[in-house]
Length: 268
Length: 268
Image (tube, rainbow over all chains, first blue to last red; front, top):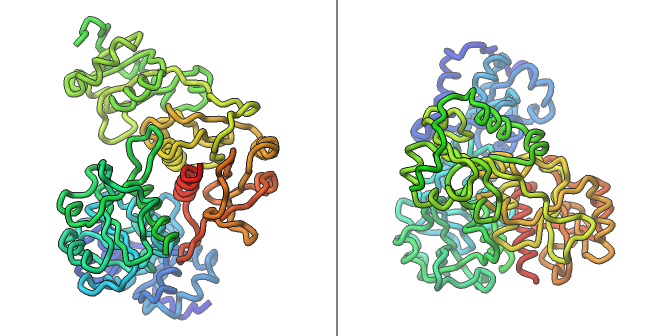
């Protein structure tokens, strides 16, 4: 264990670095302005590092250094600063009830997809989603089923908030993401070369089972409560529906997106 | 509004009926022994009533009686007892942060499917799931995609706990359910006439896309952390896998079940 890298032991929440980390965990504005985010837990920190994300600072409890020694040994050389924190401090910092005592301040990757030059592929577009857990689950499905990327409106939850990060299980580091301020305009623009679909419950929608996703395709999914905006629906060339035969009125956004990503993946 | 049905106004948590309701919300044992459960919110109460579930007692705040007057008017004649509760009491009872002030004590339906005589169909079996939200989401997907029923091991969360009920959005009242104390034995027994599949990540598993679900079929899904037990896998005739091409190590149980239910539904 490269103990010499551990520069100090921090026990107080009043420590400047710790205060900054708390801010990064709580505030999207802070994350955007500083270009940093916090990864919590040895697994997520390792996923970040292996996805090429730069680790500025690593904070571990003595207990965690022992318990996760193998995984952490790979991280020590990658972090500019390594500090030990007390177990008490780790519990105060934790976003969960079972903190693992490992935190890394990381450089936020830029959205890797430019909306003006999306590579051809199969994309899911999310409009104004609200629930961080839903967005995380959807990113994970996009990763599992190999979507070429996810388009998010700027008002969706930040992918680098602790909650979204935890529910993505590292997929936020791997799935190419494009953030757009104007989804309808982007859908119209893509419509020139992509098949564009709005996921709706409308009567004129075609079954997703009969959609042809063999070429470049994008499927737009709307907000949990209200579905897609009229402007986004109008911007798409087609409406698609996920066939339901039972009694449930609708699927939640994460389930709908999972089925869409599954179908996108199966029809290459 | 049939005001004459409202027998009293309750403001105290010490009221015997209220104390019993709190117990029903908190304790699975209480729900099982009394054969009752509590539905919270006007929508869920209405879903219960329209699914033929008997409402013993209905409790509403004055505000809720006004706000949800149309929906509640249909419920008043169905409940044996209607009482008004204070807003303060409603907030204390609430399982959510935004209580709607409507509670019904309902008769718990018996599991409608007898494991000794399951009607032919397409079933999902859940082994030892832990998360109430997952179970609720899966029931909702089973409802949406028209599965013939869901088989649950006895150690899965109770479908009539407030958390599961909320995440099922009423599907718990509609989806036929079979509770089993011995899933491997049931799978072996079903294997005589059903195609039985274990959802695993094993190398010899066949892609779910190539499975034939045209006849009676059951797919077993395991616990969130550990997957299916060895005994359950061995009891199934086939292993199936949900094809993944991306970087995510696995899907969560709810996502996996959603894809399975979707495929079961599409291959009738």
